[in-house]
Amino acid sequence: MKMKEERRWADPEAAARRIMDIARAFEPIQDGRIYIEKINYPFIDKDGATPAEYGAGIQFCLDRLWLMRHESGTYVKILPAGNDAFA
Image (cartoon, rainbow, N blue to C red; front, top):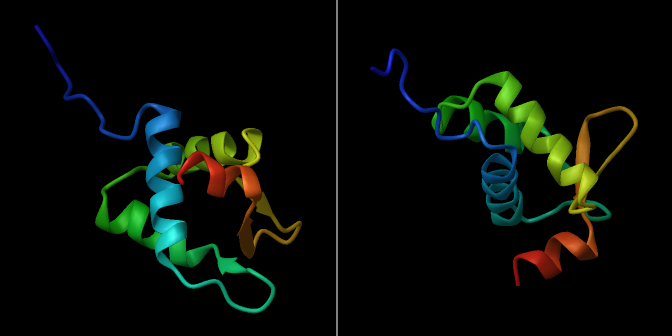
């Protein structure tokens, strides 16, 4: 008997792939920057992910070198590996 429904973004890789889809949908500004709110708002509010799922997905992207996050945390950049993985 299942007591709880399966979470769509519970798998960090699935969350990371969705984050990359969202990031690639935006036109980067000034030196390839994508402001983090352009990713976290659609992922959390529109897709219904939790902050923990978002954090795991972002960390997966960082670990795979798909994204680079600025030390301030205000923006990310898509790295060549991130473009190659989704080409």
